[in-house]
Length: 339
Image (cartoon, rainbow, N blue to C red; front, side, top):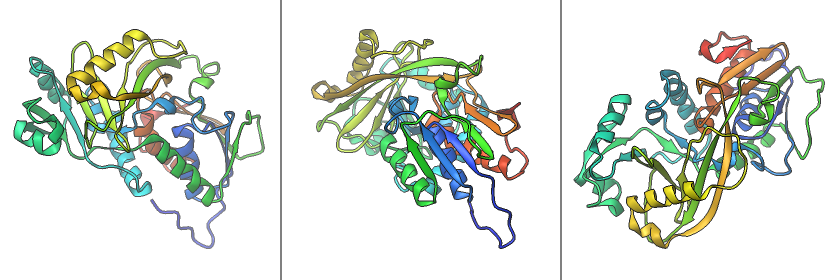
């Protein structure tokens, strides 16, 4: 990415970005980086207070997501991963390890047929990658090029950088139309009254802390009934997730979901039995019927929505597409754009 401007380059249009979830943060960052006069407006008083981003695992896993999504998600995700690495120094590039419980090897075979970018690994390699899982699993898939971020650290970095680049940020204010040249709507589910085809998909997670388990990369445990992913954060903290429930019901995690997630993480490593539960929560992810995001243009108004479970993965790529669109460049991913 380059923000260099020649002496005769016209001033880029001004932009108001509405919504400071991970999608809005990336839109504001990318446009400020490109030289736009940016105003980021968020109705909550603090970052991620009402956003689906608050319950994200923040895995940057374009290859793994191909197992349940179209090729477009992988393509956009690979581009976004490059942008993450070029922008945020806190990207953790340890890859992703995919495992299956004993007796469920067919799940690994199925997953491998749906994805690419992996190396099959045996128990010896597994023990080198994650010593705490030695002797517990005898086969897996290692996606070496994938990565993850700690959500709050990444969001705080983007927010600081937006301000450093001259962007204005306003919390605790409901947006009303202003005189910006463009308005980019990144409100997620709050925009559902204006977007008839947008639906909510509930995702529940648990955050635990333990000194008894040391894992260094996201782990996906395949299971036909209770699939799990686990993401390591700082200081022995792990995010365990996440359910995918076709529901827009707000509220805390259900007992059934909590039991399923906890049983699955104990199957991964019994050392989690003594972990302290730091948080149990749920979020509603915005999605379109095909689970593919949309950039919808309507004059000076642009909507970026429907990222489903791919918010952290895809947000940088969609921000780049919008910035290119405002610069008059042809769309690199026309399937994402709609009018």
